[in-house]
Image (tube, rainbow, N blue to C red):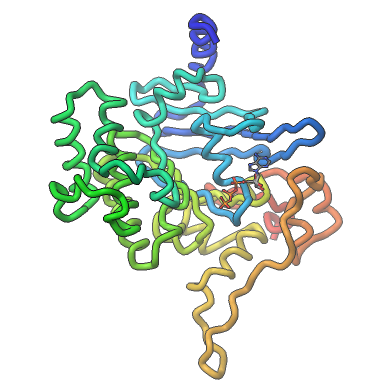
Length: 352
Ligand SMILES: Nc1ncnc2c1ncn2[C@@H]1O[C@H](COP(=O)(O)OP(=O)(O)OP(=O)(O)O)[C@@H](O)[C@H]1O
């Protein structure tokens, strides 16, 4: 693409109209497909959600529901043949300007990643270079995105390790990743993600590989940092327990669509969509009851399987697994209000 093409694309993409002043991100009717020669996987369909400044929105759903593809669509990191085929991704730059990321050039997206939007993943070992000290890796992020010299980058790297509560930061900065525990490595990843003061952090299952105690510590750390740095977080997880710990608002995804959205307390107190009810019934905390022999009762799993993304039913994608299904569920259904700030994609439960 030539420079003038990029400039045109960026002028088009600068149309971020529709983003409220207190919002950092609005995904509007996003559809992402993987288009092959003979067939198309409709991985994300008509997904909308909004994230306010300084808040945490959790996207929750089972494996394969489209959580990661949603975040990769936002970051402009879809692998071929994945492409955003419809919708807008409005983002507020730190300058205050709102842009539509779906039309942004590769150059603009490179600038936005790291400096504006950072991402952390489940397995730090696959994102960290085993042959480089953690200090050098953090400093590299700083050089890449900020005009500074080596000594200042190293000093900032130590400050960042302190910020993520790594004891003895001045010494640990010269450690290689394999010298560190899983929890410490995840703290290093968070430090790298924070290196350039992002206003949006996308965290894709950042605590899934960690044991429960360390997971709780990382969630505590993220909450503290969010407060201190006034950062917005898009938190991707399959774990309703983690949602309860970290989220302000929740979007529940199933087979590539958002089936329910609500503030976190409301979602737990008054879940509407049958899929959300099923997810909540399957978290350990909701199943603490013991049977008369004192054994913990079995977790409730949702019976059935997710439909193929190559051959989706026209109606509700959860219909084949739903205990409340009726003939009318074979018709398309949209996400509509069912309470204050509460949306559900189930016509039947909305009326209940
Ligand atoms: N290149 C691709 N071609 C076709 N389908 C794909 C491709 N990449 C991902 N998918 C499909 O998209 C769906 C959503 O994947 P995604 O990784 O977003 O799920 P997820 O909810 O993040 O799950 P997990 O928690 O396992 O990462 C899956 O069914 C996956 O098979």
